[in-house]
Figure 1 (cartoon, rainbow over the protein chains, first blue to last red):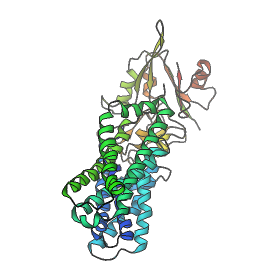
Figure 2 (figure 1 turned 90 degrees about the vertical axis):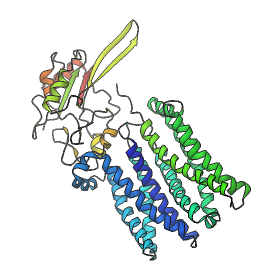
Figure 3 (figure 1 turned 60 degrees about the vertical axis):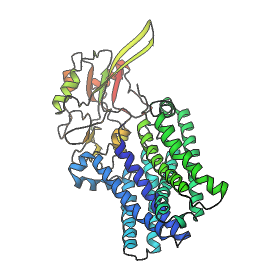
Figure 4 (figure 1 turned 180 degrees about the vertical axis):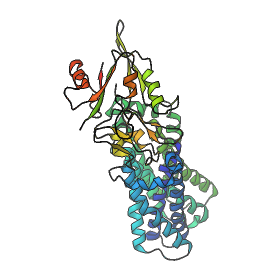
Length: 288
Length: 178
C-alpha cells in the first residue's frame, strides 16, 4: 500500500495520546486522589503526539527537505488532513500546557481541560475519517472505521495510563472500578465494531472482500488473529473482565499484576496492529 | 478555453513502451520512475480470448480525488483542465497516492514530491503534443481539445466510440478505445 508502518505508528500514537488525555480528565473528575494516573495521562498525551508528529514529518519526505512547506498544511479545509491539522493545532498546545502545569504543580484550569477533551475527541476521530473518505479503498471507505479508531484510541490511551497506574500506584489503581469496567467494555465494543466493519466491507465489493480475506485467512492472518484479536482484544477482555465482573475482588498478588501488565500491553500492541493492518490490507478498487 | 484530453487506442498499442521512455526523458525521471504504467488485461475463455495492453497515466479527472484530499493545495487544476502538482508546495504526505483510484501518482525519489503525468506542461502550456503522443510508433495516442468538436481528438472519440476507463470512479479526460 501507499503508507507503511510509520503512518501506522502515527495513527496509533495520536489516538493513544488523545485517549491518555481523556483518561486523565476522567480520573481527575472521578478519582481526585489518584494523582499518579492523572499526571501520567497528562504527560503521556503530548509526548506520544509529539513522537507521532515526528513520524509523520519523517514520512513526508518532500516536507522534510523543506520544513517551511508544512505551513501549507492549513490551506485546504476540504481535505481531512488539513482538518486534522486544525484539531492538532488545538490539542497539542493544550496537552502541552496541561503537562507543563502538572509538572509545575499548578492546577489545570477547567476550560483548558474541556478544550482538551473536545479536541482530543477530534484528533482521535479524524484519523479514521482521514482513511474513511478515500473512495478508492473499500476497507477504509466505510462509516464504521472512524468509530473503530475512536474506540481503539480510547482503549489504547486508557491502557497506557493504566499501565503506569498499575506499576507505580497499584493500590489505588485496583480500587478504580469505573476505569477497569470502562476498559473491559471498550474491548468488548471494539470487538463488535471490528466484526461489524469486516462483515459490511466484505459484502460491499470484491476488493473489500479480498481485503477482509487477506486479514482473516491470507497473508495478514497471523498478525490479525494472534496480534490484534487474541493479544489485543480477547486477552485484555478476559484478563480485565474476570476480576471486574466475575470474582469482583481487589487483586493484590504479583501474578495478577503480571497478568494485568500483559493485558494492558496487549491493548497497546493491538491498537498499533489494528492501524497497521488497516493500512496494509486495503486494496484499491479495480478500474479495468 | 481549451479542455485538454487524450485518446489511447489499445487496439493500435503494441506495448513497446516507447511512450514511457519518451516521458521519462522529457520529465527527467529515473528508469524506475514513470508516469505511464502498463496494464496487461486478458479476458474471455479459451479459445475466445482477448489480450490487450492498456497504458495508464494520470486521467486528469474533473474534481480529481487527489486534488480534493491534497492538504497543501499542491495539486491543482489549470483553466485548461490539466491537473498539475506545484512541487514547491508538496510535502510528500502521499494522501493523493492513496486517493487516486488509478494508482498513477508516484514519489520522485530525489525530492519526495508526489508527481504524475502533466501533459508535458512547460510552465504555461501543455506540450503540443505531449511527448508520448509524438513518440507513439503506431499512432495509438491522440491529444487535443475535448471542447472543440472539430479537433482530432473529438472526431476520433466520436468515430471510435472511445470512453474513459472507469466512468463510475471519476470523470476522466483520457479516453480509451478497447
